[in-house]
Length: 334
Image (cartoon, rainbow, N blue to C red; front, side, top):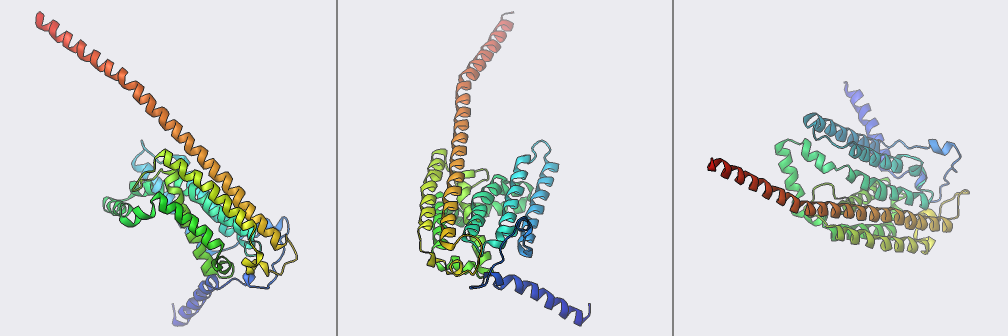
């Protein structure tokens, strides 16, 4: 490649990177946002190279790991439902970051709320149900597996995954972003928006880890603790949604000053956003609570069956020993 072509390629690459880092024009104060039309809105997908690359890479890495484990351990393959869960989690991320949800989240606070709910309440638990840490440990070489276990049991991970820390971080991030200038800044700066998505998804993964509990962790939260953990999340989320429905619109100047002649007024949009957080959060947490209670009941049933089986096993063993001794005594008498 000549020097001239290298300079042209560098300029083109710089332009692409700069376009992803600079604030999006649609997000600026006072600029009108085009009204969505049906069915055209269904085709209003965004092309975000970073999001597409990360989602695609995660899918390829996971599927390759599944293929290697299944080939090496045909009697103990990765359950198909875990692969489905992982791909569904990535689909939820794609829906949040690439679909019309992404296109209109800078115009309507309620759409922005849907985006965050998809990341925190749909994508995060689905990704954890796929047990990515377990898959990584199974597919890794002995040296890499040792390193992964060292990281998994490090002090930093032990602290970050502590149920009290994870629950508190989830609450602090949601309240802190929602009621600070950061939320408004994220609607106008692509960089801050990327950081917001990463933080929301990261704390959601920490939050759901003790609940899903299919991957190894430095500490295991018992079922009573899991029930309390989820149950306490319901009123916290409801209070946050109700609070959002009653704040002053001026708290979000980006949305308050939008020049659009379509959709609900911002005061009404704010009410919708709070109702989405309250309603969607309540449904997901209640469902999670029911699933944890169901898993607890099944665990207790298995324990009961094992306990009841022990006397029978002991009696069978004693009978076998007695028969063996009787047989030996009979042979010795002859």
